[in-house]
Length: 228
Image 1: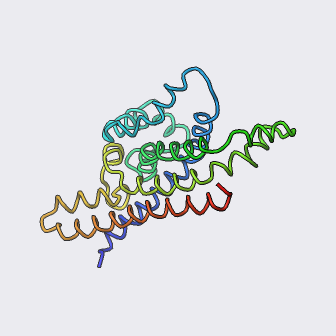
Image 2: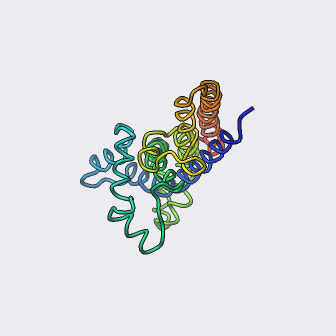
Image 3: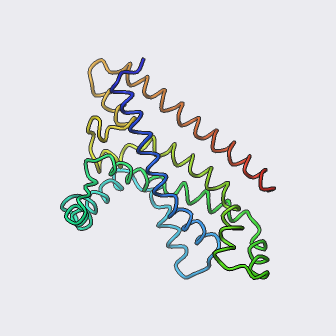
Protein backbone atom coordinates (compact mmCIF):
# COMPACT_ATOMS: atom_id res chain seq x y z
CA UNK A 1 0.00 0.00 0.00
CA UNK A 2 1.26 3.51 -0.81
CA UNK A 3 2.19 5.58 2.21
CA UNK A 4 0.47 8.91 2.94
CA UNK A 5 3.59 10.69 1.67
CA UNK A 6 3.40 8.82 -1.64
CA UNK A 7 -0.31 9.55 -2.01
CA UNK A 8 0.42 13.20 -1.29
CA UNK A 9 3.05 13.25 -4.05
CA UNK A 10 0.62 11.60 -6.49
CA UNK A 11 -2.20 14.06 -5.75
CA UNK A 12 0.19 17.00 -6.05
CA UNK A 13 1.42 15.67 -9.40
CA UNK A 14 -2.13 15.39 -10.69
CA UNK A 15 -2.91 18.95 -9.59
CA UNK A 16 0.30 20.35 -11.08
CA UNK A 17 -0.27 18.55 -14.39
CA UNK A 18 -3.91 19.65 -14.61
CA UNK A 19 -3.08 23.31 -13.96
CA UNK A 20 -0.12 23.15 -16.36
CA UNK A 21 -2.23 21.84 -19.24
CA UNK A 22 -5.15 24.16 -18.52
CA UNK A 23 -2.85 27.18 -18.45
CA UNK A 24 -0.92 26.20 -21.59
CA UNK A 25 -3.92 25.15 -23.70
CA UNK A 26 -5.26 28.59 -24.79
CA UNK A 27 -1.80 29.72 -25.92
CA UNK A 28 -1.24 26.35 -27.61
CA UNK A 29 -4.48 26.68 -29.59
CA UNK A 30 -3.42 30.14 -30.74
CA UNK A 31 0.11 29.01 -31.62
CA UNK A 32 -1.14 25.91 -33.42
CA UNK A 33 -3.57 27.97 -35.48
CA UNK A 34 -0.96 30.60 -36.37
CA UNK A 35 1.63 28.01 -37.40
CA UNK A 36 -0.87 25.94 -39.40
CA UNK A 37 -2.84 28.64 -41.17
CA UNK A 38 -1.04 32.01 -41.28
CA UNK A 39 1.97 32.75 -43.53
CA UNK A 40 4.24 35.47 -42.15
CA UNK A 41 7.94 36.39 -41.99
CA UNK A 42 9.75 34.66 -39.15
CA UNK A 43 7.39 31.69 -39.05
CA UNK A 44 10.29 29.24 -38.98
CA UNK A 45 11.83 31.09 -36.04
CA UNK A 46 8.54 31.04 -34.12
CA UNK A 47 8.18 27.33 -34.85
CA UNK A 48 11.66 26.75 -33.47
CA UNK A 49 10.98 28.77 -30.32
CA UNK A 50 7.71 26.92 -29.68
CA UNK A 51 9.42 23.53 -29.94
CA UNK A 52 12.59 24.58 -28.11
CA UNK A 53 11.54 22.95 -24.79
CA UNK A 54 11.58 19.59 -26.56
CA UNK A 55 15.34 19.77 -27.14
CA UNK A 56 16.53 21.92 -24.25
CA UNK A 57 17.69 20.12 -21.11
CA UNK A 58 14.90 20.49 -18.52
CA UNK A 59 17.45 21.90 -16.07
CA UNK A 60 18.06 24.79 -18.48
CA UNK A 61 14.33 25.47 -18.61
CA UNK A 62 14.21 25.50 -14.81
CA UNK A 63 17.20 27.84 -14.67
CA UNK A 64 15.61 30.25 -17.16
CA UNK A 65 12.42 30.26 -15.11
CA UNK A 66 14.43 30.88 -11.95
CA UNK A 67 16.23 33.94 -13.35
CA UNK A 68 12.93 35.24 -14.72
CA UNK A 69 10.41 34.43 -12.00
CA UNK A 70 12.61 34.20 -8.89
CA UNK A 71 11.78 36.62 -6.09
CA UNK A 72 14.81 38.75 -7.02
CA UNK A 73 14.29 38.40 -10.78
CA UNK A 74 12.63 41.18 -12.82
CA UNK A 75 9.28 39.52 -13.47
CA UNK A 76 9.16 37.47 -10.28
CA UNK A 77 10.06 40.44 -8.10
CA UNK A 78 7.37 42.56 -9.76
CA UNK A 79 4.73 39.84 -9.29
CA UNK A 80 5.65 39.51 -5.61
CA UNK A 81 5.65 43.25 -4.89
CA UNK A 82 2.55 44.07 -6.94
CA UNK A 83 0.28 41.07 -6.46
CA UNK A 84 1.93 39.06 -3.70
CA UNK A 85 2.45 36.15 -6.12
CA UNK A 86 5.49 33.96 -5.44
CA UNK A 87 6.11 31.18 -7.92
CA UNK A 88 9.51 29.97 -6.77
CA UNK A 89 9.41 27.19 -4.12
CA UNK A 90 5.63 26.94 -4.62
CA UNK A 91 3.43 24.35 -6.35
CA UNK A 92 2.22 27.01 -8.78
CA UNK A 93 5.81 27.39 -9.93
CA UNK A 94 5.92 23.64 -10.50
CA UNK A 95 2.81 23.99 -12.65
CA UNK A 96 4.48 26.79 -14.63
CA UNK A 97 7.58 24.67 -15.22
CA UNK A 98 5.50 21.67 -16.27
CA UNK A 99 3.40 23.90 -18.53
CA UNK A 100 6.47 25.19 -20.36
CA UNK A 101 7.78 21.67 -20.87
CA UNK A 102 4.47 20.23 -22.12
CA UNK A 103 3.55 23.25 -24.30
CA UNK A 104 5.18 21.88 -27.49
CA UNK A 105 3.20 18.63 -27.18
CA UNK A 106 -0.03 20.62 -27.25
CA UNK A 107 1.01 22.85 -30.13
CA UNK A 108 2.30 20.00 -32.27
CA UNK A 109 -0.85 17.90 -31.89
CA UNK A 110 -3.13 20.87 -32.61
CA UNK A 111 -1.08 21.99 -35.59
CA UNK A 112 -0.96 18.53 -37.18
CA UNK A 113 -4.70 18.11 -36.69
CA UNK A 114 -5.40 21.43 -38.37
CA UNK A 115 -2.95 20.87 -41.21
CA UNK A 116 -4.66 17.57 -41.97
CA UNK A 117 -7.99 19.37 -42.41
CA UNK A 118 -9.11 20.88 -45.71
CA UNK A 119 -8.71 24.69 -45.57
CA UNK A 120 -11.36 24.93 -48.31
CA UNK A 121 -13.99 24.41 -45.61
CA UNK A 122 -12.95 27.64 -43.90
CA UNK A 123 -12.68 29.46 -47.23
CA UNK A 124 -16.19 28.33 -48.17
CA UNK A 125 -17.58 29.63 -44.88
CA UNK A 126 -15.93 33.03 -45.44
CA UNK A 127 -17.33 33.11 -48.99
CA UNK A 128 -20.80 32.62 -47.56
CA UNK A 129 -20.33 35.71 -45.41
CA UNK A 130 -19.18 34.29 -42.10
CA UNK A 131 -16.82 36.50 -40.10
CA UNK A 132 -13.40 35.36 -38.96
CA UNK A 133 -14.63 34.75 -35.42
CA UNK A 134 -17.58 32.71 -36.64
CA UNK A 135 -15.37 30.69 -38.97
CA UNK A 136 -12.94 29.95 -36.16
CA UNK A 137 -15.61 28.88 -33.68
CA UNK A 138 -17.80 26.89 -36.08
CA UNK A 139 -15.23 25.40 -38.49
CA UNK A 140 -11.62 25.75 -37.34
CA UNK A 141 -12.06 24.82 -33.69
CA UNK A 142 -13.98 21.59 -34.40
CA UNK A 143 -11.34 20.66 -37.00
CA UNK A 144 -8.55 21.02 -34.45
CA UNK A 145 -10.52 19.30 -31.66
CA UNK A 146 -8.89 15.86 -32.15
CA UNK A 147 -5.50 17.52 -31.76
CA UNK A 148 -6.65 19.49 -28.74
CA UNK A 149 -7.86 16.38 -26.94
CA UNK A 150 -4.94 14.16 -27.94
CA UNK A 151 -2.43 16.91 -27.19
CA UNK A 152 -3.98 17.71 -23.82
CA UNK A 153 -3.85 14.08 -22.68
CA UNK A 154 -0.28 13.60 -23.93
CA UNK A 155 0.81 16.88 -22.35
CA UNK A 156 -0.83 15.86 -19.07
CA UNK A 157 1.18 12.64 -19.07
CA UNK A 158 4.36 14.56 -19.89
CA UNK A 159 3.67 17.06 -17.10
CA UNK A 160 3.20 14.20 -14.63
CA UNK A 161 6.70 12.98 -15.45
CA UNK A 162 8.55 16.30 -15.43
CA UNK A 163 11.53 16.36 -13.09
CA UNK A 164 14.47 18.58 -14.09
CA UNK A 165 12.66 21.86 -14.66
CA UNK A 166 10.60 21.50 -11.49
CA UNK A 167 13.42 20.61 -9.11
CA UNK A 168 15.61 23.40 -10.53
CA UNK A 169 12.93 26.07 -10.32
CA UNK A 170 10.97 25.20 -7.15
CA UNK A 171 13.20 22.69 -5.37
CA UNK A 172 12.03 19.47 -3.67
CA UNK A 173 9.78 20.52 -0.80
CA UNK A 174 7.58 17.82 0.80
CA UNK A 175 3.89 18.57 0.43
CA UNK A 176 4.55 21.67 -1.68
CA UNK A 177 6.66 20.86 -4.75
CA UNK A 178 7.55 17.17 -4.31
CA UNK A 179 5.74 15.63 -7.25
CA UNK A 180 5.83 11.95 -8.19
CA UNK A 181 9.20 12.04 -10.03
CA UNK A 182 10.76 14.01 -7.17
CA UNK A 183 9.33 11.51 -4.69
CA UNK A 184 11.03 8.70 -6.65
CA UNK A 185 14.32 10.61 -6.56
CA UNK A 186 13.94 11.19 -2.82
CA UNK A 187 13.20 7.53 -2.20
CA UNK A 188 16.31 6.50 -4.12
CA UNK A 189 18.40 8.83 -1.95
CA UNK A 190 16.93 7.37 1.24
CA UNK A 191 18.42 4.19 2.76
CA UNK A 192 15.95 1.35 2.32
CA UNK A 193 13.80 3.39 -0.06
CA UNK A 194 14.19 1.06 -3.04
CA UNK A 195 10.79 -0.55 -2.51
CA UNK A 196 9.01 2.80 -2.38
CA UNK A 197 10.92 3.97 -5.45
CA UNK A 198 9.92 0.85 -7.38
CA UNK A 199 6.29 1.26 -6.36
CA UNK A 200 6.24 4.90 -7.42
CA UNK A 201 8.07 4.12 -10.67
CA UNK A 202 5.49 1.46 -11.50
CA UNK A 203 2.72 3.96 -10.83
CA UNK A 204 4.41 6.52 -13.11
CA UNK A 205 4.74 3.96 -15.91
CA UNK A 206 1.07 2.98 -15.58
CA UNK A 207 -0.08 6.61 -15.68
CA UNK A 208 2.09 7.42 -18.70
CA UNK A 209 0.92 4.35 -20.63
CA UNK A 210 -2.71 5.02 -19.79
CA UNK A 211 -2.30 8.60 -20.99
CA UNK A 212 -0.84 7.57 -24.34
CA UNK A 213 -3.55 4.96 -24.95
CA UNK A 214 -6.32 7.34 -23.91
CA UNK A 215 -4.92 10.04 -26.18
CA UNK A 216 -5.01 7.78 -29.24
CA UNK A 217 -8.47 6.37 -28.48
CA UNK A 218 -9.97 9.81 -27.84
CA UNK A 219 -8.49 11.29 -31.03
CA UNK A 220 -9.84 8.41 -33.14
CA UNK A 221 -13.33 8.70 -31.69
CA UNK A 222 -13.47 12.44 -32.25
CA UNK A 223 -12.26 12.06 -35.84
CA UNK A 224 -15.01 9.52 -36.51
CA UNK A 225 -17.53 11.81 -34.85
CA UNK A 226 -16.74 14.74 -37.15
CA UNK A 227 -16.44 12.53 -40.22
CA UNK A 228 -12.69 12.69 -40.78
